[in-house]
Image 1 (tube, rainbow, N blue to C red):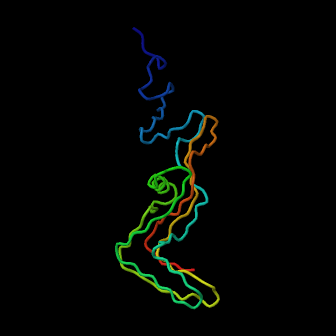
Image 2 (cartoon, rainbow, N blue to C red; image 1 turned 90 degrees about the vertical axis):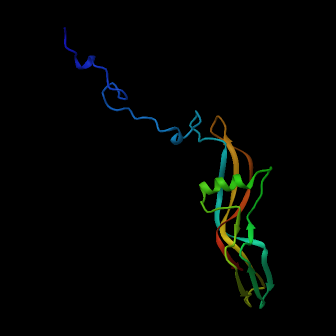
Image 3 (cartoon, rainbow, N blue to C red; image 1 turned 180 degrees about the horizontal axis):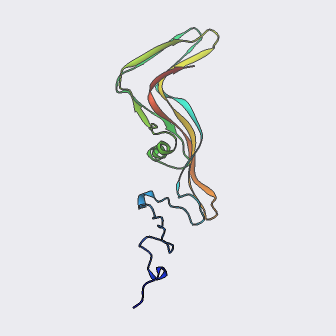
Length: 174
């Protein structure tokens, strides 16, 4: 009968030959899929030229010339939407969902007033004309939908612009 040497003892489960633990793979939900060439997952949306902007409601916008007092009011429950363009047909909800993850969680396609509100503004004498509008602060951006090819080059299959509301109702003028 012989004694076992350290080299004869199998390493513990989940350990390397030197006995150190082997890092375990994360759960499936935590795995980021990567193209074999090292490219990010595809297909998906890409955003550029993102700017904070006023997203006005066209039905609640008034215009006037210098010296005129403009006013706008809205009842609780009034809804307005953002706008978007696309090269081919696409759902606004898909762009919004991706923009929520990438740009801001408060972006939406439509906003609804939760209170009755209004405001007025006089177009200044040094300004030829102006406008007053209900809307909300939001974002404007360019978007692309596409994927990476085998050479890790982004290929856009659709593109356009978007201007979506993000925050509570807001009254702006110019």
